[in-house]
Image (spheres, rainbow, N blue to C red):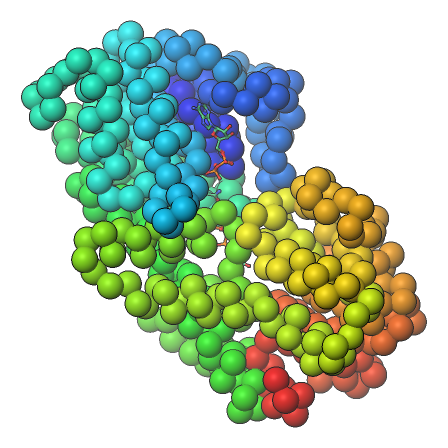
Length: 445
Ligand SMILES: NC(=O)C1=CN([C@@H]2O[C@H](COP(=O)(O)OP(=O)(O)OC[C@H]3O[C@@H](n4cnc5c(N)ncnc54)[C@H](O)[C@@H]3O)[C@@H](O)[C@H]2O)C=CC1
Ligand SMILES: O=C(O)[C@H]1O[C@H](OP(=O)(O)OP(=O)(O)OC[C@H]2O[C@@H](n3ccc(=O)[nH]c3=O)[C@H](O)[C@@H]2O)[C@H](O)[C@@H](O)[C@@H]1O
């Protein structure tokens, strides 16, 4: 089948590559000329494991191309996916400017019947707005049956770092659609992805739209819940890693997303929790539970700074080494990364910061060059450091040579923001280690 995907960011690009890999003919559209030039040359503008290889393979196979010209992208496409950004507006609601602008542009470029698929994360009711603005552009009356286009909601659940895997082998595909004929088309489009038992859930449009926010908000809640338990662990001498095992092995609870740490970041949880609070309040439903999730998360991000302040009351000009700047491992994305809160807090206190991240250096340098020293490998940032903060759980940081770490640092103190190390083991090696919820009552946190 033929389709175009408007927006070639994390979601649009991986979606386009995924559909091409399954044998569909795909055109990726983006209004960022440099991005399209890079993609057309077979270079991915983002780091995502396995992406560039599949990008090249499908371009060479003639199933995938890129353009800045929406009308050209749409020319032969039955489906037009909208996968542009939906950042928070000032009041916390989702800013639909880009989604609705693309919808209008699609309407102006219609050369035959099209299925318009909203893949961006959008509040309940948005697909109706897409229908409305497209009708406005086409001079069609609201609510009157028409055969120029249909609008479908098809939210995306991929995670950065395993985006390709998530798209090629989804836990489920959610499709919100009112028209049974279009439901069949969507099932046909997704058939190659769902052969091995991955279900397509067809439902009404509003439920599909809300499902996306419910899923993200629940995962964020799970993280804040375990982080709150971690606080209790630190106050009581319990170890959150044991508590996680004990509670997570109950199948009704489950192990995933029960890692305590320096809080969730990224382009989605923070933004989608805010947007869902806004949706609830706009509907007259107080969203206290999610406000608490946000408050706990904000507090988690401050923990490394609190520990540094406590170890060095009023101290300035410390050397702080940071391992990891990305908001999670296996991505170069630094949006809302917890590491940035530590980094900026240290700079504001007059400390020197030296940082290493395996993939996010380009993005970090673009923002902090001149203010932060960047290392080419993990140990380079440790010379003379007063404290090491592990803030992203990259595999390369998992089993450091602790003797080397100790020799390089001025004071052997590790703040383990992702609970990668055993504080007792480090203590036996003569290294002070502060995890998150590892029972550090004695450290008076
Ligand atoms: N990043 C993620 O892991 C996930 C994101 N989402 C949702 O997917 C949507 C997109 O997110 P990302 O891909 O992360 O955003 P992004 O910012 O990486 O990419 C958006 C792309 O759209 C392009 N664009 C903007 N306006 C355009 C226009 N008028 N015409 C053509 N291209 C245009 C931009 O140049 C950019 O390349 C958001 O709603 C997000 O919440 C959903 C699941 C996962
Ligand atoms: O809507 C979205 O954009 C996506 O948001 C998240 O994906 P992503 O933000 O890429 O990454 P996650 O793996 O969910 O991690 C988010 C944050 O939570 C943190 N996290 C995750 C798990 C955990 O147990 N503890 C924890 O602190 C991570 O370190 C990271 O900062 C969801 O997992 C995806 O399903 C969803 O599609």
